[in-house]
Each structure stands twice: as structure tokens, then as C-alpha cells.
Length: 199
Image (cartoon, rainbow, N blue to C red; front, side, top):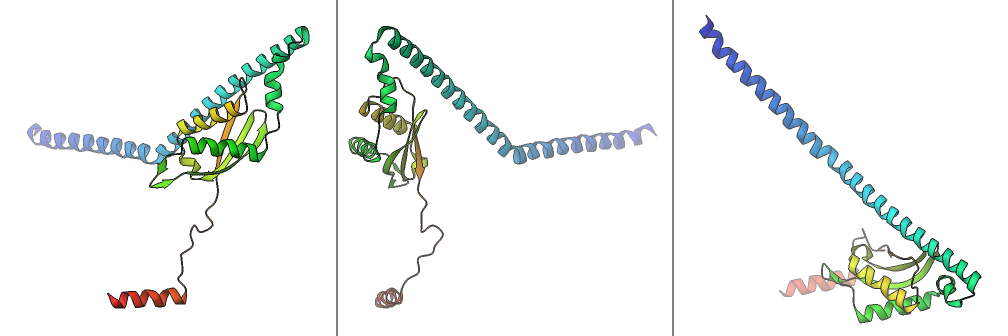
């Protein structure tokens, strides 16, 4: 009698192990499929938080440096101690910023993406604390970080912004034709039929 129960018990044990493995597999698939977007969002939030912390530290050091320069200016009366403040408060018009950006683009063009050149249209001042320049153009979200740093350095050298935090942000314009189907006029349809009829 024990011989008959032995194969049945073995089958039952194998069935239980298979069920446990299937449950673990389902759990793994659930975690991979449903929690991956959450993990990606969490990673993006961590990266953003890290960037905010770095920017805050840079801003703090700049403020401390500016305060010490103001104190030294008040004590010693050295005019070069106020250069950073004067540079930050300098008026920078849209035409000046655009001219500097265009010169930088002529000197070193943005890379091509999917066979199309990234076009930078114009730049303007978006804020003063920290100094922020907003550049408008096409496909600016695809601009590599190296080119962004290049533009920051060009603006920094053109306006003598040494020792100041400078942010350059990019904005892509909306495509007015996105989602619209190009409908041919009656004349274009006639020409198309005529051309196809000749072939």
C-alpha cells in the first residue's frame, strides 16, 4: 500500500513545486511589467533632485562669494569686487543675445538628428536670479548636453559673466501642421492623375 501512495505523493509534490514556480513567475512578470514605469519615474525624480541640490550648492557658494566681495568693497573700496554684480545686472537685450547665439551657431553648428538640422531661432533673458537665458528653436529637446555647455560658455564669454551662475534653457515651438493631413487641391489632383496616366 505504501508503494501506491509513493508515486501519487511524488506527483503531488511536483505539482505543488510547479504551482509555486508559476506563482513566482507571475509575480516577477507583474513587477517587471507594472512597476517599471514607477521605477523609471523614481529614477528621474532622484536625478532631478540631485541636479536641484547641485544647483543650490553652486548658488549658495556664489552668494557667499558675492557677499564677501561686497564686504571687501565696502571695507577697501576696490571696484573689481563689484564686477560680478554689475555683470549680473547688465541689460542684455533679445537682439544682443540672439546675435551671440547666431555667432556661436555659425562657428559650430548643432548636430543633425534623424537627417534634420536642429535650428535655434532666437534667445532672450528669462530671469536674473539665477541668470537664465531662454533659447527658442526646433527639436531643442534633442540637443546634446555638450552643445548646451558650448552655448553656456559662449554666452558667458560674450557677456563676461565670470563667477555667476548661468542657466540656458531651451523651448521647442509647436508644429502648426502636426496631426493635419495634407489635402491636395483640385488642380494638384488633376496633375497627379495626368502624371500617373502617362506612366
